[in-house]
Amino acid sequence: MGMTAHNALNGYERKVVRHAMNTDLLTKERELDLATRWHDYGDPQALKDLTEAYLRLSISIARKFRHYGLPQADLIQEGTVGLLEAARRFDPARDVRFSTYATWWVRASIQDYVLRNWSIVRTGTTAAHKALFFNLRRLKTKLGLHKDAPMSLEDRQKVASEIGVRVLDVEMMDGRLSGVDSSLNTMIAGERTQEWQDLLVSDAPRPDEIIEKSMDASKVKQMLEKAMSSLNERESYIIENRRLCDETQTLSALGERLGVSKERVRQLENQALRKLKDALLNVNVPSY
Image (cartoon, rainbow, N blue to C red):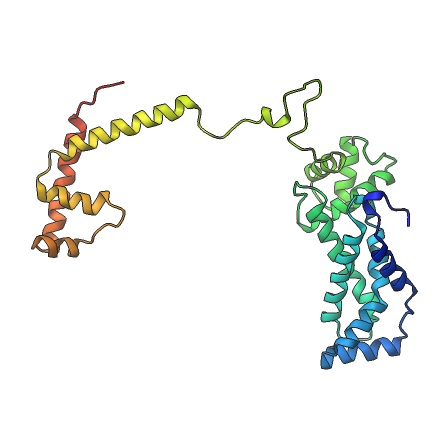
């Protein structure tokens, strides 16, 4: 089968493939009978016979994607998923052979699997990116370029024009297909103790930023405590329950507790906020 060790099938999988390739193809009449029994009556045996007869279709298409370095058994399995989806959607009333209809679903299922698993970095999911991913190497060969050779601006423009994508998309995809995924734990060339992850810039705050933030928070707390001391007991109670607690209280609820109207609570709150503003503008907090 011409597969690499990574793509090699185990004994059971080879047996399944041999069985599929040796299964007789269906006549048009037999295919129509099985498809009708499944479509109209949900006959599971009809589905089994129909998909087993065309499992070779999944195997054949999966082989065309083996150069992406993914397990051949997984590619065949994904193709079989597409085969089952085709059986679910196939309408035997239309004068179309099931194999012709199923080919698109099998290829689409395998392509989606390749896009999801070929690289840990997303390669794009739009129709244009998908077409570019699966056709770039063929087009580079057509231009007389090696699959890993750099492309000139003129080459990228030709590919972009043929597929209908931006030149920038061609440049991005060419870079993705020419490179390989590497572990961040790989040692840097010429180094014995430093890994690539050691060169990543951390998004976490620096120690001096943590200390500065902590000091700022402490200042704010002191300022608020001094400002709150300018309020009387009732004003302080309203501000704490309206502004400083996790579950704030409504004006009506506070009015009932204080024995005043909702409007009076609103007036007291506004009065307290004005006092706080004045106090915060005039408070002095020692610097560190």
